Length: 147
Image 1 (tube, helix red, strand yellow):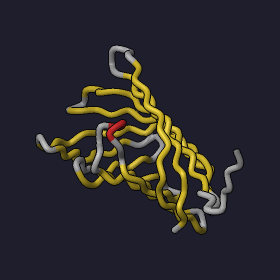
Image 2: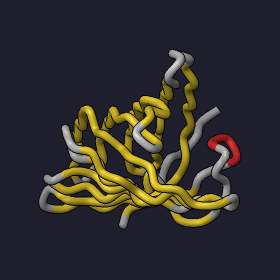
Image 3: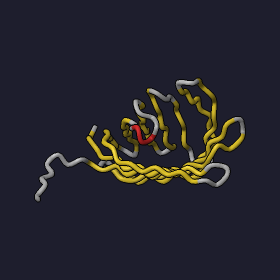
């Protein structure tokens, strides 16, 4: 596992067309070999999920995002496919669906980029369309600042 900086840009479109975006940079850990990898980070107050660990598992078949902590879920992203998942919050749990429109993965052992575009539904009604772009890059421990 390598220490990395993870840059996340997320966009949510609700059924009424309203947009909400979030962008943040956090530290995390990453590993990648033979076309498969994983990375994880702790959510912050900015995302509203403080106290939750988010992990991504990447394979040639797709991406699995797992959240553990204040919120718990396991979402499977496979382009062109819909999967159901259990979404657990402090207020209760519900089953939701995720339909992946597109996935773009350009990762190697040094990091890289990943984009996922998906629609979330609850009881067959669309809750929103979500898109996120993630960049993973190695942290350089030997960076020297000059002023």
